[in-house]
Image (cartoon, rainbow, N blue to C red; front, side, top):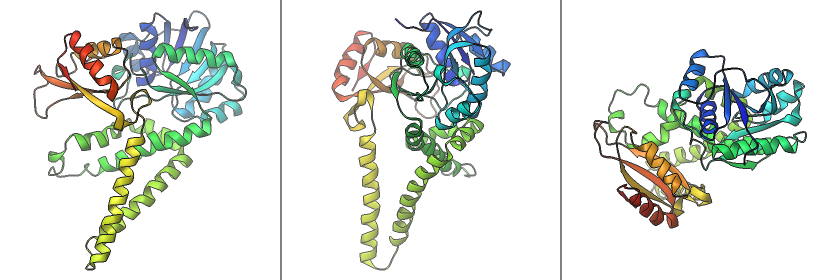
Length: 368
């Protein structure tokens, strides 16, 4: 049983509201705070908790605020004895911890946290109670953090469906620079090429370019703060990508050379770089710790426009099979009110037949 009975969520954006929804799904009293009254009202309206001051000290306060705001908010709440323990969800960890220490915060009752989940959409209306299901949720305790604080934060993560793991703050920031922050910059740079396109290229866009640029739709001010708060690690990650990009540009230039040997050498270099991409992609973890090469797509007929997606997600959860992602595939130009869309559910290869059989038993048309 979870040790969390009451919680407060400070910040009702996508992550904060999703946490509130997950808590309420398990019957935990959640109290919401936000300096934006419209976001606060929306979070309460979707059922993430009560937009009011807790009547007594809560078990845990979740600071769902930008990295630079973690320390001042933490300090203010601790001065009021607002919660038994505190955590945050900022996507960088060194800066908030250093600022909290400099502000004289009680580090024993605070543990840094970062759920590795999100969407390209932001705000409380994009929130989902299952957003963290099966996703890593990093905790970065300091030398001062009390074990009870870590235990309570881990209980919160369990309630939300996440998988808790512990990392050093610097290790975390290096990792997310490569897995999240640098890719966001790269996606934005690719997407920016279409900002002034006359239409010829955008008319040809398909799933590949949409997947590549999906995260570029993130809120500009939020991501400016996130990336800027992790600037050294992001710079190192992008510098490595820049070195590889320079090699690709050089190879492309040589493909037009008069010398056959130079052209062949350029083709070899280009192939080598693309091959490294294939190898890297295969090493990226998929569902239940499997690599993507060990994953398989199960396709399911659903209503277009997301109408049957909540039921599909619930039934997939009932199967007890680790699901990496669920994606709604809609045909370009088709009326979203049309009944026959397709959802692709990515699972481990060995689990695919079991998932197909289970979904069919629940009445779904599924294959894969």
